[in-house]
Amino acid sequence: MAASQARQNPSGLLSIGHVLARLQDDFADLTPSKLRFLEEQGLVTPERTKSGYRKFSQAHIERLRLILTLQRDHYLPLKVIAEVLEELDAGRDPIIPGAAPRSASSILAPKRVLSSEELRRLTGASPRFIGEAIAAGLLPAAEVFPHDAVAQVTALLKLSEQGITPRHLRPLRVAAEREAELIGHAVSTRGVKAASPAAVEGALEIADHLDTVRAGVLRRRIGNA
Image 1 (cartoon, helix red, strand yellow):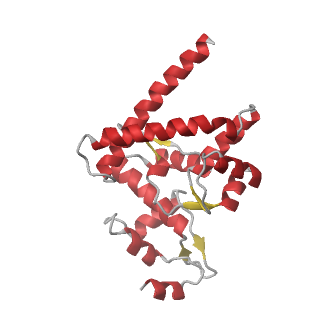
Image 2 (cartoon, rainbow, N blue to C red):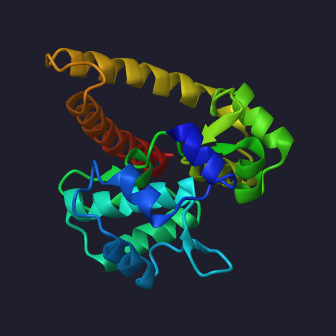
Image 3 (cartoon, rainbow, N blue to C red):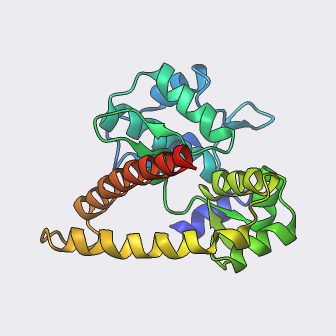
């Protein structure tokens, strides 16, 4: 079936019918009219053929998945969803409002990745700078990067302007690895199945608490400097 669709869509763009087939298992109430409504609201902008037919890319599908998840699971109005998307389009990783805040990248499909060239284009970083970040262990040594790497590289560039280069941040990476081990141990003691949604949510919650504590300690140190 996939091979047949690839032959029918050599450009990789999908029709509304194919989009529905991919998303309706998770979003049963998704219809062509709802897709058109989201387009009218400016939340998604599919490409158009010369005949006027809508065509969707994989990026469009992932964007739709995020929109529909924010509606269904987070009860966000379209106005707030539009603000989240605007932040995401700007290369940031916005926090989703709610009782248990989480980042937009944690909702996006795992397949949302960027090539090194795309990452450099979105951030303005040079190949050498990306290489330094990889050498410091701040970015994965891979051919592709997660979308939240945009916000990370942007922050690294701003730090570099202040004289804090990637190599200065190696201790930060080591500390983060230790915290990840601490979080993993804490989650496992709860008897939660590893890699389950409950385990991931629990780990994110602990990470948020650690961020709060770390920020408080850092501010006090700066204030006493």
